[in-house]
Image (tube, rainbow, N blue to C red; front, side):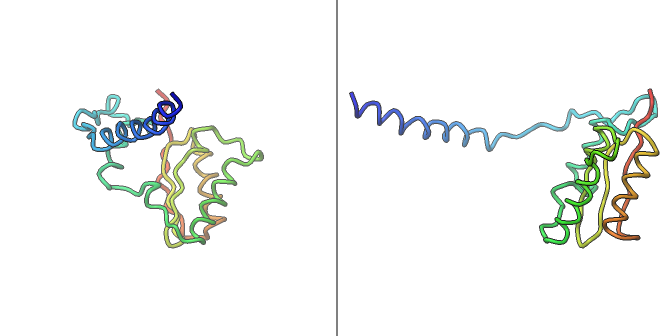
Amino acid sequence: MRYTKIAFLLALPLSLLVGCEEKRGASVDTTSVSTATNEGAADANNSARNVRDRENATATPGDQSGAPEDLKTTQAIRQALVSSTNNYSLTARNVKVITTNNKVILRGPVRSAEEKAGIVAIATRVAGEGNVEDQLEVESKL
């Protein structure tokens, strides 16, 4: 009986691994993703915009450099965005900050032009003038 329990405990993780292996090769069908906008007005928070990320048309967080100085820049910008002294919306606090070769790309939706200007100012203060590419989009009020 004791050996049966041991064998069961050893077989359980193996069966979980086998189940994971089967799912790794699964593919996701992205052909049904709609890229339509709401009557011509593009919503900055529209999930259909993520299609461009899958097609490598723009920088994504996966493009973040692993260089210590780039990581430090991204971290400083992120900490400034979420500091308690800023009253940015949750949407603004979650913008993408991607740093490569001390060049910062800001992407994502923000609620207002004021939030956009504030985030760009923070990034410019940290990374330096001329080192920030602003791809932030103000959400449309529908």
